[in-house]
Amino acid sequence: MDFTATARRLGIFSTVATVILVVAYAVTLTVGLLSLQSSQEPIGDPMFTILEVLIIIMMPAMVALMVAVYAWAPRHAKTLGLTAVVFMGLLAGLTCVVHFCILTLSRQPAFAGQPWLPLVLSFEWPSVTYALDILAWDVFFALSMLFAAPVFRGSRLAAWIRVLMIASGALSLAGLSGVVVGDMRLRNIGIVGYVGVFPVLAALLTVLFYRTTPLEA
Image 1 (cartoon, rainbow, N blue to C red):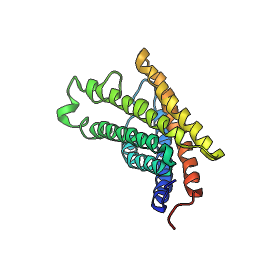
Image 2: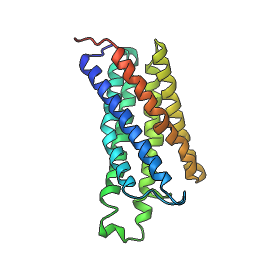
Image 3: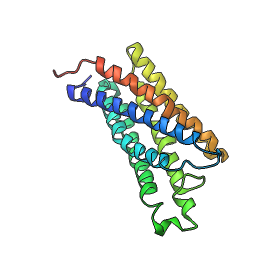
Image 4: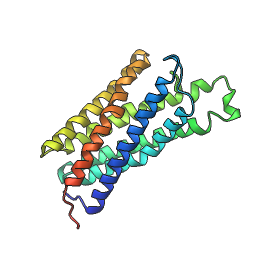
């Protein structure tokens, strides 16, 4: 294992940041949903803007987390760890583009009054940005988790991390069922994977990185 002191510090910082940001996202999402008069209504401002900003801020921490996982991986599992990093990078790039466009373009006068806006820049199915976000979270995030899972073995803590990674990835993939049947309520299965299971997984990774003795002092 080539886990240096720099990688350990990066791992601890990124996992703690990820837990804080995902929990903040979950709390904001809950408050936003509870404020709605009907489940058919979209979440309004300021909660919607906060959610969009949190997702963008969250992405560097999640990529750094997966880089630390790659650094922690034993040499025989480095290929799997690197594949997980690539898929996490794809998630980050794609979802940042989606949410930055929603934040900056959807409110511009040139866009706001267009009849085609809901088909391009909205989270109402079907729309282009919604489809891209599903690809990011229900496919790329899921693949990142599933490729990273076999990296962890050798201790009870590592075994729990492996199980939670598999669960998070499988639930995220299951969210694709909403697209298949045309019922976006089924996408909530995927949300459980990356908003419910993933922060617990990140917290356990914090403990693992903290307990791991680095190569360098």
